[in-house]
Length: 221
Ligand code: ATP
Image (cartoon, rainbow, N blue to C red):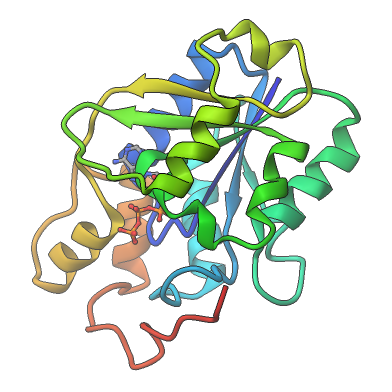
């Protein structure tokens, strides 16, 4: 069983890494593809370039055998639709069970995604629950969840796609937004991100300036 964990990773932090590892362990995933969202369609343009984010992701995952940096969205033109990413992973892995791993906050906004109703044709969805995180699902998402939800892990491994499973991960209240804000204010980001990533940020003087006017331009869904 293979996990797909997408993100803008602007920058990658221990919240991403720890939760990906915990999901991998709890579900006995053979690997988790950490897919860098090159041109996220449903959110602001990332603050630093795709090349910097890719370097940071690779540094954070260096020496890991279970969490793998995945560049397939960088190699495609246009908006980085998860539907296209899952189709491409599906082509590579035949009928293997695939698990799209999302935070509860991201799952709440799923109905704005390209071909979201068809995502379950391609993969299961694993929703990470973080104790203390207040996430509201609207009625459309609640319905979508109720139709496919399972409490049985074995239903994930016995089918290639189609189920939604919620799973608890250690709540680490870290976000890339708060890291960017800390760095901009000249505060330390140590102990929130891997040292290798911190060093890269320092060497390349990233996140020292307020976001340019480019940030904030959504690309449309
Ligand atoms: P930003 O603050 O820029 O929105 P982020 O820290 O939320 O960034 P993303 O790259 O947008 O990170 O998130 C990718 C995925 O990681 C999402 O599924 C999100 O729910 C999950 N995620 C982000 N932060 C954490 C965390 N602290 N613990 C567990 N999962 C997280």
